[in-house]
Length: 517
Image (tube, rainbow, N blue to C red; front, side):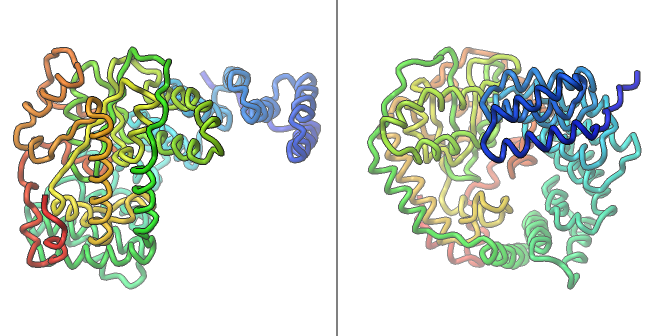
């Protein structure tokens, strides 16, 4: 069945839209809504007028009215992608990720989506944690003749997150063959993360070295290639070459994203001196949030994946919402204002954690930097549990320095002295939280986790109060992992990375200057 076409905007509709826009710019939201309502009375089937009116409802905080209007548009024109995008974002912001996915997939299936619209839908689905549906949209696009290298790059990243590494390699190679911009998208780095290289003659290594020899590379593209080569050399035990590659790429990163230790130290001191906020007296305590925190590259992904094998646990990945809410609360003028907003903050975060899929009793948020907000966590959710992943400081530093991160996330990781400062501050904070909240905060050593994972996870399960349950033989391969450990976390647990820094001690004397545990 062919979807009804989206009707073009008529001249008088356009005039009404322009008039309403002018009213919005003047701050007359009620007048703009009235203008649009009058126009809709004349053109009841106009999707563009209804879309504009839904936008005003969103600005006024009337999410229900906006949703009803957007769903009305999609009922009349199932392939109306602009309405689908607005509705999906509205649902995402309410934690209704399943519903958002259904809207996006339905609209893309019903309409003739362009490559750009497909990419927007794929990115939105990925943002909603619906990686399997996002990948299927890419695959459907290829089947319909939209063989675009940008879609292949997205498909490669999505397949990697889902553990479909052969499929990921196919798409990443297609992206590289299809566009010189694939180097800017760091596709070689994605390729390098799909395996452990064991053969110096692997074609990836020759490809990376050949591309690195080009004279027209941007710093961003060069950085990605150097991280990819460093990883390959490390796999092969060519430590001197690995260090040379990582040293250059970290130099590039420092120049592009300088990091200042002073604000970091001030933020730590401020939190150490701040009194505990008042605990919220009410709220839904029928479920328990689990926050896995600590330095990145300290085993948080591995631990979260092990705990998420329990059927009563849902793993939400690294949610950005708690730091956002903390910043909003910190910006408020008075303690009274903050206290008044705490219930709303708890509800907003709970919606993002619980979401609208099958209900559970325990929910994991493994955003590592939530160690900055443990006091807020336990004020919002007194039933919460915080697990601090701690790893040998020198191993942590090396692992951070050799890893590529998105700009603005771990900018301190380019310099060993900066890394040492963050490790020191993190440990001071976690010691403080453990003294303040001894029943709610527990430390897990990476070395214990990889040395005896069953005993470590069983002890945590007892502490968390998880009921006894038969564990599957291996983690589910279709659960997306979107951290730097997406390949390692799906491999058998091993101890090869314990005391790994010693292999680089002679090449990187900075490691020995980091205080040992």
